[in-house]
Amino acid sequence: MNRKTLTAALVVAIALQITVLAGEYLGATYPLWTGKEIRLKAVPVDPRSLFRGNYARLNFEISSIDAQAFDGKKPRAGEFIYIKLKPGADGLHVFDGAGMEKPGSGTFIRGRIESAGLQNKRIPVRYGIEAYFAPVKTALALERQLRKGGIAVVMIAANGKAALQSVVAGPEIQSDKE
Image 1 (spheres, helix red, strand yellow):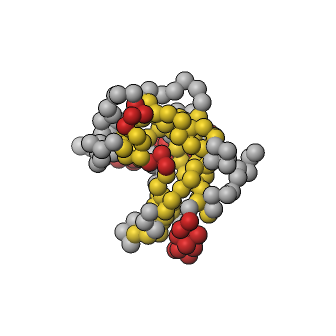
Image 2 (spheres, one colour):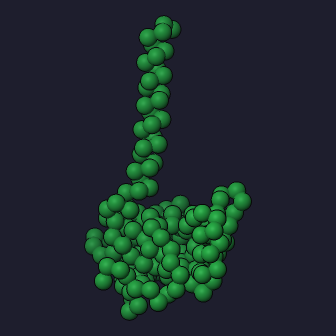
């Protein structure tokens, strides 16, 4: 190979890597830029990990869906599902139905069925908003504050993809945008 070909190949390889990284970044931040804000009741599960950093692991009421919500259809592990949400009396969004197809209207969040637990009557679902990363002091303070529960401020894009914007303590907190 001549020097010109090697230089061109190197430029293409670097450009491809930058494109992949930019795509991952844009995909993760897209809901934050274009999404609709909702609030979900959150419960901390596992506050810190030495391997992953300082974070609060969150669990939601919609993290486990009753199998009967799918009208007899049995979702398989790894499949996307769509959870319809409606505002509750306290300003927090709550479960309003589930399906395998993207709803035509309304507020909904896209999740993925986990492999563990499909044989049970409850189906575990992950949305990509289950971990809230924070600096050490903030994560430890958040752990203490969330022992009685908290609220996850989530941005949901038009396609149902969600991104965690923040976590605040106390189920009594109402939306800023009301």
